[in-house]
Amino acid sequence: MKYIITIQLCLFCLFINAQELTLDQLTSFINQPLNTIHKNLEVKGWALKPELSAFNGNQLYQTYAFGKLATDETQALAWFRIHAFKDVVKQVYYQLPGLDAYEKLLKQLKSVSTLTQNGQSIEDKQIGTLYENKDYNFQTLVGGGSYTLMVTTK
View (cartoon, rainbow, N blue to C red):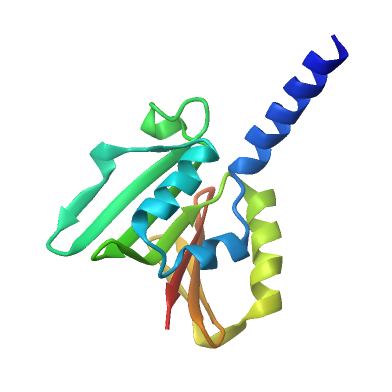
């Protein structure tokens, strides 16, 4: 009985933490082969949403959802979108599961980057903030209960 409870607790912790990607994980996805990232996300419980994914020439857009209700687009706990060129990831978007996860990621972001000049804008009732470091550009989009981070190479 003790082992069953331990295993259940471990699986619960894996499920809860799998949806929260760190900044290091997000930046590590850039310039990686698409199939590597796909496998990484799948193992963590993310589900590919083919109806929200597409090809456009050499570009591929893949969208993943996380959570028990991932089959219902409006009920996913978190979203992740990959933009790849010739099967190499060039840009990622991560819609975080909530304010706590966003604040944790924002703290990581501020420790490794700086706010760009004229780095804030308000569009469509969202506040966009641009950050950069020597390797990456970052953009946060916050509004209407949605918290998104975009990562791309310079």
